[in-house]
Length: 196
Ligand code: FES
Image (tube, protein in one colour):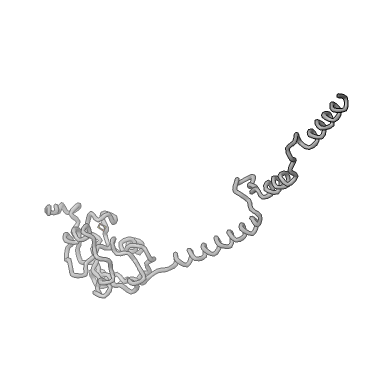
């Protein structure tokens, strides 16, 4: 009796030491701590994830930004040559940045092109005539709204366009634009367009 109790007590101590019959897996602890080591860390200020090599990533980021800034600077400098010819035949040569309308370019260079509606296709006072048909053919076709306004323009020609709708592009380098002797502004002159 005493012997069997002693042996049971011995078994209990043995169970306790070995984790209650379950095997204590040393590799489990080892795996956990290894995976914890692999967990990403976070930048305390920005909250962004930090991986190993983050320093290299940051340096790469800075060098990319620098390159794109210099590209933008080159784009902003691109211009084309445009000549405006006024009603007296006097010419004015200007440089127009790509993407700018001929109406804006005229205003920036003190050229008398009215543009009463400021480019909202509600007048025909920005009427210009492309002096060379080859340049006229390089333009996108006018929209219905532009054609409606051109119908009201004074002295309409085959190569007439609205200056606010002609946008500087590389193909237009060297274009010559004549400003008609008169414009018709129905908002000011009291002209009322007939309904279609
Ligand atoms: Fe009025 Fe061009 S400014 S249509």
